Image (cartoon, rainbow, N blue to C red; front, side, top):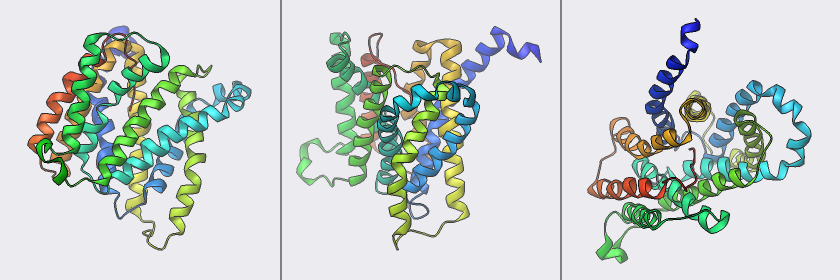
Length: 307
């Protein structure tokens, strides 16, 4: 149907997907919280990215074969990116979700564009305005507000949750993942590069997943574990990445970057509606700091990231 491929129809689809993409990513928070007691974190991350890698690798198979020598020559880079993006930002998120809430994950992860903007100045030499600096301070104070549950005056009595620590580490790792993709130029297109990174991630995850498999405390594999792997691989994996890439190609990077601001909202609503998590005032206050902070920090000179 030719009318579906007109510039007008493509733009309409992209504008629609702009609102859907953050919802696709928020599905990963549900998977993370549901996986506890069903499938171990590294096994889930391995299954997710192996499935996603097979799909995007099949789509980009011609390009991957054409650029095979270049890809092998830079295998170390893809291993590092796989470790940051699939091990730390994958398995460690699932690890953290065993003790923290999906709402906390969404709000803490929301600060990753702020770290990217700050690191781009310190490491890549990009310009940084006073407004962006203010945004960094505001957003990071919002993250800390969520982590300490708003108990600034009684920090010594705060019950620190290990899960929040895992998510903070994953958030920092995502900033490194995004910055290294910018620093390390690649001849591969977006789909082929994602397939190469998935391959690196699978190799890094394999020994950890094998260790988990051998533990006596590991739950037996079940249909529910398979379902979680498939959902994680297809929805926040291939689906979200493809939708974001399509929107960016049609609408441009700056317009699509605004969709990242919907992540904490969608994640919070998902946690409340699907998982029955309660919404505390520290979540509301944290979001009220994080969202405007992200807006200020990710003005034109900031580096844009995808989750």
